[in-house]
Amino acid sequence: MEKLSRDELYRELLEVLEKFFEVDPSTVKPETKLFEDLDLDSIDAVDMVVQMQKKTGRRFQPDDFRQVKTVSDVLDVLERLQKDAPAEDAR
Image 1 (cartoon, rainbow, N blue to C red):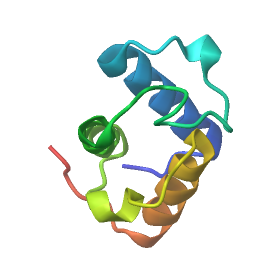
Image 2: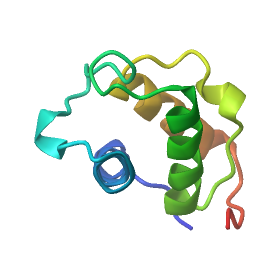
Image 3: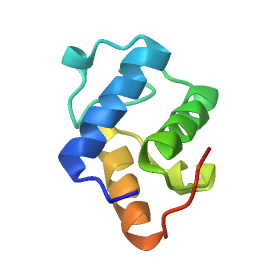
Image 4: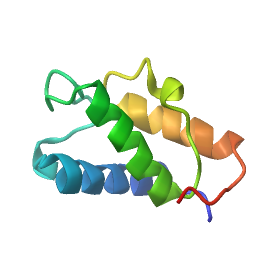
C-alpha cells in the first residue's frame, strides 16, 4: 500500500473518529485533544490505532502512541511510522 500524505491521514483519522467514536468531524482540528476534547479513553485510543492500521496497511504498536495528546500528535506518529515501516498486511 502506498504512503498516505498528511492530509490523507487526517481525512482517514476523521473518518475513523466519526464512524467508531461518533465524533463530528467538523469539531476536530489538529490541536484537538483526544482525551479532553473528544472524551476518548485509553481503550478508545487502542481501537483508533487498530483502525488506522487497517486504513494504512501498516502495523503499529500501541506503545508508539503512548505520548500522543492531540490529533496533530497522532498524525506526526502515523507519518513517522509510515515512513519507517515496510508495508504489511494489517488485517
